[in-house]
Amino acid sequence: MVLLLPGLASPPVVGALLMLSAGAAWGIYSLRAKGAGDPTEVTAGNFARAALVAAGPGLFLAMRGQASVDMAGLGYAVLSGAVTSGLGYVIWYSVLPALRAISAATVQLSVPVIAALGGVILLGESISLRLVLASAAILGGIALGIRKPQAGRG
Image 1 (cartoon, rainbow, N blue to C red):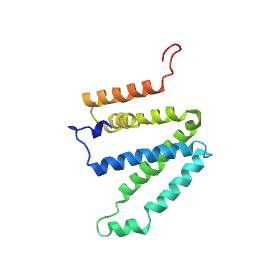
Image 2: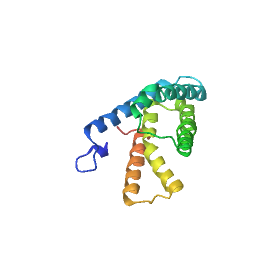
Image 3: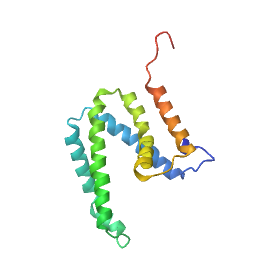
Image 4: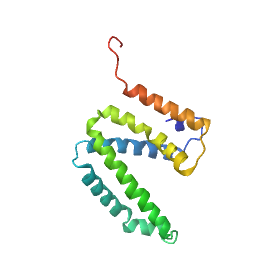
């Protein structure tokens, strides 16, 4: 939500609404997946259905004359999209039943920090003061959100 504050590099209103919608959809998806069954089977089915939608004729018609296929790029897309994301979903949905809904929602907020850390480790991106402060704010907020209230405190 900080990205939506005035004075920062805020996205356009339509982009912000799309981000909010995506976050809400992800939350609903996670809540529905909590008791959906075998995480590997459910994830594979979801990915197969999504691939059919993404590869449908509408996409090709919309991109007609504007896109070209690079085999290396296609391979990287499959690796990052299907393989690593699929593994991430399977792991997430394996631990999800052990978490309360509010804890699961709060812990999911760590994804930007994990992605940034991956960029630093795997891509050699620099560690900036902004990255450190943003990560500390996110992780601090998560810690506050998942901590158990102590006896005698309101």
